[in-house]
Length: 358
Image (tube, rainbow, N blue to C red; front, side):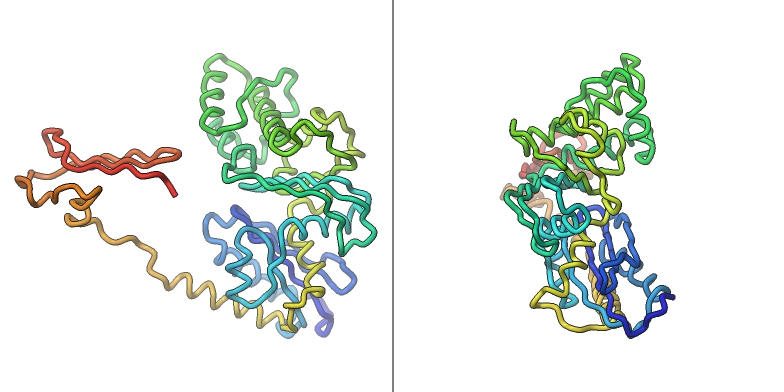
């Protein structure tokens, strides 16, 4: 247990689409505790486990200010009454505090990407953000994209970067769409292309996709700070340096690259007008109650019944037809739409539905 019961701490939470990140700073901005955990679709339960471990590191009555950023910041901020911080501002604040001369931030997380252009950063708590951009709804070229392709190749995602940097002849792989990338991988493996060349090709595809989407032909000013979970992939780091013709001094991976959003939150929390004095125990208790509420909700869909099936697309009710001896339901879940067809045992179409995925 950290022995400063009366010293205030700052808690920054980055609630992302794939991971939950937590950073705890003291009053001198020193990092006391950090956590980076995949939530597998259960971010509240994951955050509860992370904060539960803080009880062993800090005192329950420790004065604590907290803030949250990331894709789930609105829900968490409202539920436990803490300030929500803009993702761009959080990442820029942490970057400038660690690298005050940075001019560009490349951030690639589990399912989103960001580009931030910086000006003259005279104050670490007020970064000079000149331009910002985030990716659209497609996650191609993000950490989830690399993880998906590594699973298809039977390679641990932790080994993917190390394998990629061994390549002497990277393959050409499509990076704009995971469906097309899968097709390319199948063909390359059928042709006997070594895994390290395919892995390097995927890393190059991620970089091409990012630069096409954000740089749009413009030169990215260095020093560039590359952060987010994908910065752990040495193959992608190498691909960025090659594509931008930069060395290790001009394209930097910061020490806390995985948790920069959480660090930025912790740096900013005391400057938030919405922040109010709390104890660590109060904050953990609020998250515990939120987790219990989520667990108690009934999340199952209604049981599929004859009446639901018969009303699809406003077609005649199945009960109005001769009652078949059992039906067969076919479901086609595509990338943009879902189709459902119901037939009898003789393959006569009884009902159908076609809807775009929301």
